[in-house]
Length: 85
Length: 422
Image 1 (cartoon, one colour):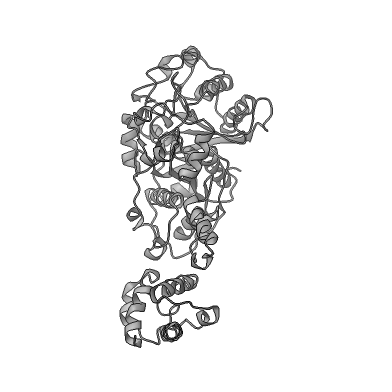
Image 2: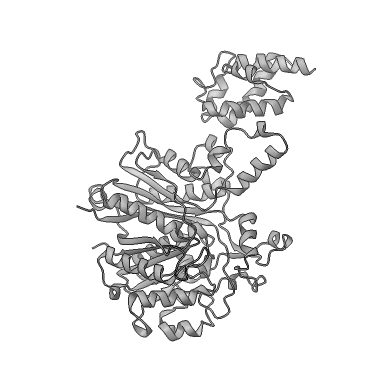
């Protein structure tokens, strides 16, 4: 799976936690989940749980801490997918 | 100097009405919200009927944000949000305020935090999957969940209290809010209570053999307060909410005023002199009613209507006796009395607030709602207060002062006195 595909899949994971859905249209790898998408920081754990389930991976605490930009999320997801492959 | 406290908004989620206009129509016409529940038969409950609001999650869409609605599973919290925000809007307020409203607080009660949500947590943890619980569980299993959602949505900044005193919870919440305003600690309070009786709480009551079991094939007949064939109560769910305001604050913003809270009392019989964990003691109840009358600065003879606790158990007769002793009135001189539970069952923590919404509506529209299912009234009750004071159809009548009481497990009592605003 390439970064572009993951990014478009990730939009679906982020949608329930993003109040203003229009913000999702313009996301790039530099988009900050909290600052740009206005996602409540408490919901980052829910996003991690949903991503684990969507990609059938496990995201450890250290990796989870890196997931604040969309690009970081893609890094972690790709990394974990490669590990489990 | 103490302040006068008026009622400026109403909201309700009831088994026989999901909003105030529908609820008003139902209570005028004696429409029951009690239904047969097939699941209760499968679970081998003795009582297989209950009062459940016709609620769907979609109804909350315009009440809270989409992200907040996503992940909300607690129905008791959902009922409370809807009733409270309906009351807030009924009082003429916009839902969203930019600033924190430090003059406005909230007292909202419940009996148990949502057991459906708790069950999910228990199942996950026992399956060693606590990692999958996510961020939304704690806020829904904490007892203050409902007040946290309501106050957060409205931006309330005064006292935010989640109270609990079993079946006296709703009236106690209203009394507490009234007192905060009366003594100048708040200008406005969102008050009420909510309850979602799931099968676990239901089963525990069923096991106590205090629930109605002989009318499973006629659900609308199952809740029979003051009837000789009353054989226990029917559990109900829902929420009721009121907006209470300092009179000057309400007048300054040109609010519609439904009525005035004149006073009230909240006490306990201390589980002495006949009072127990499960039964209210007569001495405490009579004192509670008398203290409320004193607090309200009225005479017992001023009371035009009693909205009773009256659950449809053997305690009904004793409750009528207690009212009679407290007021020093009997026979034709006794005021009319009704029990909303005949139509919606006993909504436990939510009973007091839903019944208070009904009380305010009767005051506002000058009528007495019918008691349904007392075609066979308890003769001892009739002997004491006559059949004329137990209306079975709606009565249009001048009502200036109304007394409302609820009594809960733990021998806790609350009585409120409301009147028309003059």
